[in-house]
Amino acid sequence: MTRATANETPHPTWTRVVLYLLCFIAAAAALRRIVALLLVSASTRAGQYANLDAAFAARKSLTLAHIVPALLFVILLPLWFSVRMRRNEHAHRRITWVLFTLGFLVGLTAIPMVANPVGGITELSAIIVFDGLFLFSFARALMLFVQHQPRYREWMMRAIAVLLGIATTRPVMGIFFATARLTHLEPRQFFGIAFWIGFAATYIAGEWYLQRHPDELKAAV
Image 1 (cartoon, rainbow, N blue to C red):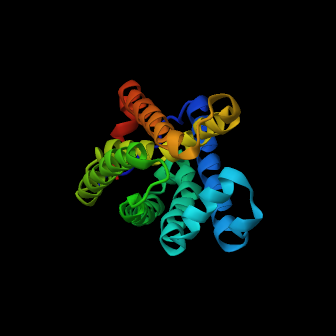
Image 2 (image 1 turned 30 degrees about the vertical axis):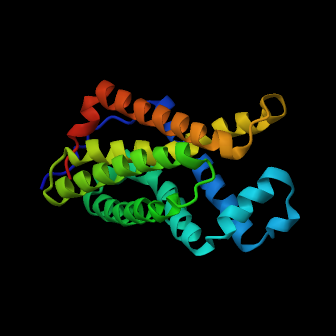
């Protein structure tokens, strides 16, 4: 087992900004959903939002089992990318194990949530494709991690890029909601499209980053 070297360079400023922004959006979305499930009655909200809240409230326990680990994951994620944390081998391994645990909970609970998706077959296809990619990448990362192989970071970051796609879908959905009066599209019509756009864009951006920053993958555990 080797240690992360002290001469590791920090991530470019813009990548940290993007990471923090996506984590913030994902955390805010999760917190909003938790509040809606636990504290706000769907009947107090109007229109399309009430219908969405009612759909998630119908599977309250499953939704909480999915979004609470996701919330904790995105809160801890910036620490995993921290150069200072990576120099502390034992602390970095511990937080990596926590992320593996939370990540698998997120990925596995996403599977039963595909029943009766808001966006119909389009959303269902996006969830199946990207959740499958997430779980495969995470499993590959775990296998390499327990073998103390530095390439685990490549697969870990690939899985993270998929997971953060849920944050990218939020502004995409916001655009659809904001233009609904013009397009006359309802959530059931644009949710699936937003999922495909958000997850695909973030995954492609993650692959681009991996190709442009090969040194990022040399840090061993």
